[in-house]
Length: 539
Image 1: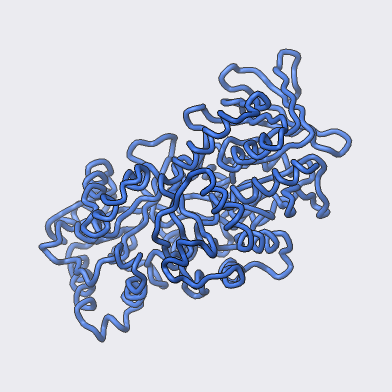
Image 2: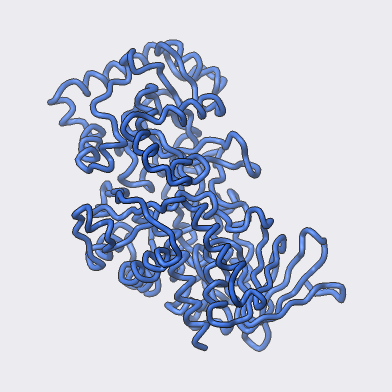
């Protein structure tokens, strides 16, 4: 796109493309160094902060006071061993491995302590996620939850940015979409695009250009384009659980200048999505934290498998297994749902957002009927019934077919409950083994029922939830070195160009490899942004 004579021109020492958490942190750190910054945000002021505004706020951290209080013996060495093994990082994958090592060694200082210095707090419990299936994952609990969730993180950082002593050195452009990078003499000198509100072009001239646009999984088309070749074909319905502006457009502009994009087929999606009852955009999905004490069934009513479908072990494997089906079902009862159901993000977790510790603990100890009532009232994907026959009829009515046989569903529930009641059968059942393992950690025990039969009439009504594959994050992206410099196909830095956060595959173009230990995303945005800004400040 050429820049016409009517376009608006801006200038700064650095232009940051993207108003998500990585872009905001980069701008904030550069202002601390006295730099002039142009921050280009495609969204509206009300949605400043991007996907982080809706995020749960979980972070994988190593060697924290919270871990020590829970007597969790962790170390950067153990975390790196877990990370590389679970992510299957190749021995010659230089920059992803370098960023993985940077993360485990430095995130406690550069992320945890920095956030604490801003007045943010973490919940006292540390959760144990991604324990691994065929490949071992987290050896110890590392998943820390921010009080206030992603929403408070975003609002805190935006407040710091807008009230910064060097605020006069910040040009903040909302509603501006970058379409091209500007280069001359082999160096990137800024960007240009469209002011979508005013309907005119704009250009930014800068010594340094930082790409912080998020990943590519906000575009379902990109998800399909980069679908893992060894997986079953992509299902017809893929919900969008990312930010729709994370569509890979600026990634393409980087590639046109010779930048190296890598690990695009490595994605972090989820197996349990439902359409958002009040969607913010077309195709918007909610990612459920699926209950564990359930029957997880195919559209025909057969068990999904062959690996056990129990959340908390291997999210990627669960995604691969559900991808073979147009949708899947979870069958459970109200008591199980009230104990185990959760929804990822700040929107549906008011106890965390509002720091309501006592009420949050009551929800854990008693049940979260509020959430189950809300979802059964708002979402047609939740159906309830008094009997298996009635439940099967309502499941078939929702899908418009007769695939769920009432008698067979009733027998599956009975078989499940018989295994649950028999010590020998339970000890030999892979799903029950995993649930037993989860309950050995006190954090999971609070969120997991103890031998609760599905057919228990006192625990009713029966509940069925129709689930869809939902996109979330890109694990690959723009290859970067430890200074955040975007690298060309020859491995050399592209002068003037940098990438941070998800745009950089959270560092190096793919720091997590094929799987994340979970909780490396918000913290990865902060770490890569702060490290890159520190390098720029010293130039």
